Amino acid sequence: MANPIKYKTAVYPGSFDPVTYGHLDVLKRSLNIFDKVVVAVACNKKKPYLFEQSARIELINAVIKEDGGIDSGRINVVGLKGLLVKYVESINAKVIIRGLRAVSDFEYELQLATTNRTLNPDIETIFMMTAEKYSFLSSTIVKEISRLGGDISSMVPSIIAEELSKIYSKGENDETLM
Image 1 (tube, rainbow, N blue to C red):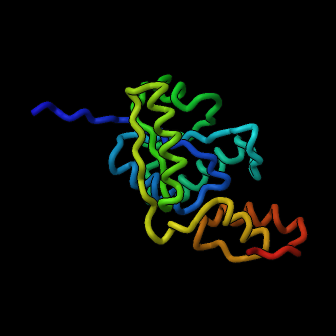
Image 2 (cartoon, rainbow, N blue to C red; image 1 turned 45 degrees about the vertical axis):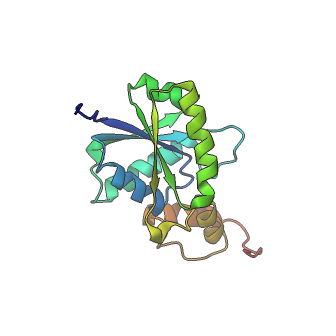
């Protein structure tokens, strides 16, 4: 039997606008598999972000530093520009981690994984389901609840909740959700 290949570094890309407990769940569990995880914070000019890329990087680093359950020495948070596959190649990684919340995420993620595999068949994509208690959670939902004055303390770290509160306390919360 051939020796299995152990990949030491994986790239966990996303917008993380903002990072949630669901993201952190996938990150922590990825560290059970890989020696190092690079969190690649995306910047898509077609997508409106609440936080600038540099702020998202700073917030993720602050959350990791504050969380005693994450080995910060095994994580690198970087800004991602351009093709994900090119970045993965540039750091000699072979694995992309994608978090899934529900079956509805799978079709889109499968398209991305297939496209990335077409661009470089040596790079694998691993899908990791978030913990069930976070399966409903998205950054969009968190922002909307915060904007409307709801409690998001069970959805995001306190640093993130505070930043969202600063942003949304300046605006009017006169709309309703759903």
